[in-house]
Image 1 (cartoon, rainbow, N blue to C red):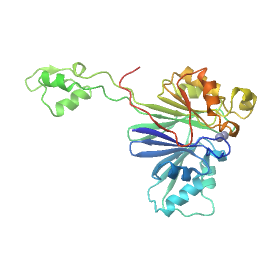
Image 2 (cartoon, rainbow, N blue to C red):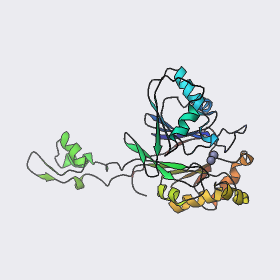
Image 3 (cartoon, protein in one colour):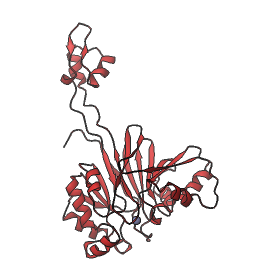
Image 4 (cartoon, protein in one colour):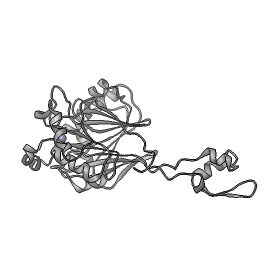
Length: 307
Ligand SMILES: [Zn+2]
Ligand SMILES: [Zn+2]
């Protein structure tokens, strides 16, 4: 299972309809937060995302991306959490993050680990990793790519049985690509029973950024790209000045990277009620696009074979 829940989709400040940046990513039993703007913990309750967060990934230290942490940490503490919580951020900003989230001398019931990530560095989890990549914003910033390794190819059980392979450990060895000797002395080649490796999934979160090469590279062939779209093209000058993207630019990045699906987020308050404007603009560049609302849930399905 790989599921996203958009907790906040507004840029800079909340609106009646949208909270500021935060995205919950659940992969099997692991829950991660990508950014944690003000009010995130209430959105987690509202949209049924538990508080059992393994780690937080901050794209940069603008207030709309991390101010939700002090309150969230305090709630976790009131609940008696004991497990360590890892907070990732752009390398070099660890001390700033620590100072920003531990306000008022709060004593927490659980340890915090602050870990800066240089572009290219990754945090490893069981069966996948989350890697930072360089983005272009007004603060030290990164985006994050969650990637899974390729999965083993499909094992043809019927064919293995018909070929006289006894069920048991030989099945596993063949599936992992090993040629094996059968009890009757015949050699069995894995290639005859196992299909091509199946691709793992890739999910890319841009954070705040101008459209940039590193995002295109990180999102190359990705299953899902979540890209900021703060403005429409009428405000391209403002987008350039504040180092944000327009919806059309986000669409262009998705098209260049050849992703399967694009979801826009981080809308300027003036477009809060008008996400269709953003979608219409991005669609001119890339058709498989939608705009996130607070509470939007997206499942990223496994792929059977290379498309
Ligand atoms: Zn922002
Ligand atoms: Zn920002």
